[in-house]
Length: 291
Image 1: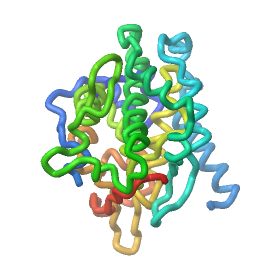
Image 2: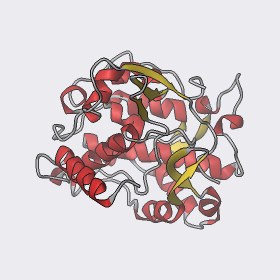
Image 3: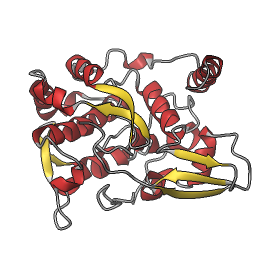
Image 4: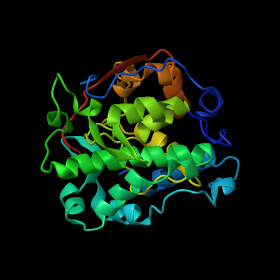
């Protein structure tokens, strides 16, 4: 995923991910890579806010009049049908796909993504936010149309993976999830998009309970990256007894985007002692992240 966010020095990713456009990005599909105490919570929130908003601007004011779709209905559906849960030992956002399927408003969201005139999108943030949302809408709709589903991979086969099949339209174009991810989103050049795209599995980074927008994209991507790198059940788990840092397979599948997993992770987990071994060996649970 290749792209550049404006005012990028708000996060640990800023120096290395906000500038250059990467060529030759790895195109492996996802199929193929087949309560803390209140005081502690407050301190963590304060630390996060400082890291994300060190420039004093939680919103990109240059994007407040962005020419992007009206995501209010999508927002409402997400807030109603996405909730925090722990399933099979994995903590994350759980999706009520049955509820979305029964919601008369959902087809309108799908049509909006399919028919929106992408030529209206002029800034990098507008485009990136739109295509991240489009990917997540396509995944949700794929599951909804085939509901009930236990594993999204089961909708395809070894010979014809679901990720490479056309699953809907985006801005008037028939699109596969693989084509959208590797052909459009990854070329923006920001590895944090891997924490924003949701593939419908328990081990995927969480489906956010709101749409991505140009004005809030800086904050949203920073929050997604923070959440995943601090989720021991599917993102990063530190074992001090063995001096090992266990990572999600995502850091292996997209190694060219993250460049060096250890260096990347240490931007978010600065207290990991030197000398610890880093291994991308957290088992990836492809079970559906909802019901």
